[in-house]
Image 1 (cartoon, helix red, strand yellow):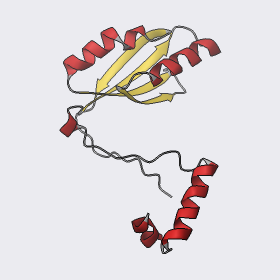
Image 2: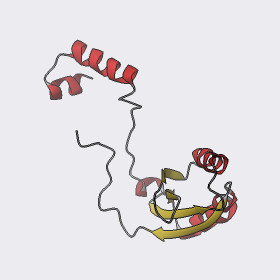
Image 3: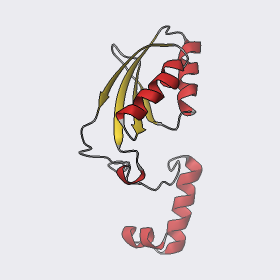
Length: 131
């Protein structure tokens, strides 16, 4: 907090109060530590587009809820256009992805089709919003 206060030109106490207020308002959702995925053996990013069999509210909610229980799924976006969802899946290897796909992904509720592309390298990864 002291470092943050110095960066924004405040003393510790007013900075802490502003931080607490932003958390109460839901602007700050959580604090995270960014870990090097390669160094922990999860350096392969599989980008999966998903099409569901049905598009009723029950099916959409069931799929979204199920993705929350999969630690390999790092991000899940509901999409416009021809695909329903875009997932970023972090795994160690293509073989690990294949196992995840066969044992988990294809068993998520309502899956109709999955198309997967593998990232060759990460050019930019940021969790900081441009504010």
